[in-house]
Length: 336
Image (tube, rainbow, N blue to C red):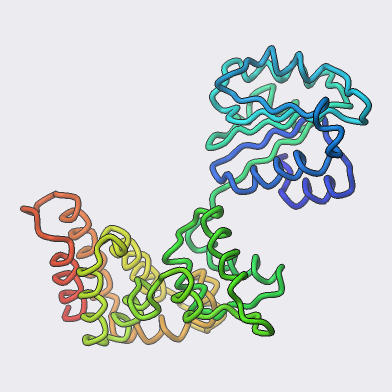
């Protein structure tokens, strides 16, 4: 079975090393964290010159990787060999031959980003017995907000639910991008106030706390026509910062959750939060929205969103400006 990120990092901190770390998957963040830790912490600075080698998949072969990995370290306990962009290499399965008798003084780190191994292969099975196979899976949309909150908790920082929802809408699921923006915010936190707010985000990241997809959802959910139209106008005036395709995707996710709410037999707050995969803080917002948009209306809105998504992509539309399309769409949703 693949090992977890926490298991690998726990062993590395205890200086318990595997001869091979095969780091695969479509989320590069964790692959880079493990690779960087090994590159920075296993050897002392004076040992790295002779005992740390970084190779790139386009410029090397599996035969060369194995040959280098079989060398003994010079005046150090270990040799570190890091292969980046390993996913472009040929004869990857030959690594299984090395794993049959790996050199225990070598730590071979193999980056295999955006791909994973076939679980039926000899290499995968050998890695699980002789090395360490890790598969980094991209977060699903509903996992991003809890991830942001956990990341900040580890640093002793709190974030308001509205602020974490705003960041989730704006940043998507790219963990490198999320961490970069969060770290910028941490630097700007006032002394003695370890809480990230929407105002702090607006000031330091440039997301408007009044005009964003999260606030548009909220305005539509409340049937606040004035506020929804103000946000739509702002989006139309700033199309580069507010792509229509992302707004439609955001609204589609929002009304899909409202649809799921209507089908729930148990509408207690805890069950709603678990079923919709949302922060309990927002349950009341979905309850209010569901009271304004019946099951039938919600289904019609979801069909409407699909239609406007196609229109935006050029199907059945003669080139209406994105801002006008959004204006039409939101008007129809509010008056459906």
